Amino acid sequence: MLALEVQWLNQLLDQGDWAKSLKVAEQLLLRGEYTTKEFAVINYALCKSRAHRQELIESIPPGELAKRLCLDTKQWDLLAKVILLLGVSYGRTRSYGPALSTLYEYFKYQSNYSASHNLISHIWHNIGNVQRKCGRTDEATDAFRRARLAYKDQGDSQGYNTVTQHLLECYLESSLSEVPTLLSELRRYATSHLSEPDSQARYFLSRALYAYQMKAYHWAASLCVAGLAEPNKATYTEFNLNLTLSKCLSAMGNYKDALGYALAARLTAIRTRFFELEFIAIEAMYDLMSSQGSNLLIALDNEYLQQGLDMMPFVGSSVLHERGQT
Picture: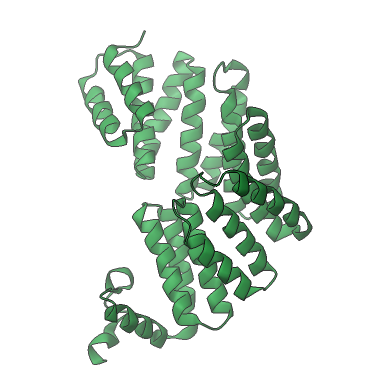
């Protein structure tokens, strides 16, 4: 039986109160006098709280310690949770080698789990995400297919729908003939889950990505605008709607607005502390500014200033040195 304060810490984690669970875990760690099993739980709480607060690099050391303590104490189900958390944190900090080696560790101890077999869908889903970031589309496709089967077996329709979108994104790079079937699945899900947050916006994003791939830029842009108008969008969806709209506008020669939507994608990432996505948006902004010159940025800055918005915090005063001369 875990100490009462450690049981309370678990309750805070279940409630998703990350600030409070982090504070309590840090206090318990300083107090000491707990068993090895309890220290494993406390370090798991530190890892999970920091990861959910987007303090990803800081989440890794307590996660690695929790993993070792779980192995020492044979807390197999907790070990599986730690492995998943660590894999996500490594992946989100672009440490792709450690991310994959950590996620695959889940299968090494699979025969020991009693309550963590259901994590296999999330494990394959995250393996697919990391493989795709590494440019290994075939491996990512295989992992997403496995995740889809696992979500289906578990009756997790939301997880199934989300990984279907990610599988579609892989097919856009490798097998366009598979895309219409997945789009039909996403449409049926969106139609039958009208009140579910993100389902409609995710469907619009998927259709927009396909239209963009087919060079139907005006249609893709319209789909992005429709998706952005949907409420309760997930960060990933809102980010990619803005970024895809930026790409469409750039392809149509509207570079100023393209830069504006790349900036909107960056602001979405900043707002949710999703720094991996922010880096992608910065690259898109840099590419536009490099190819079109500083006049593009100055024109957008002037338009934003008229609306009472200041770009300087996001691009820097040195880039906007012409402002004082206009």
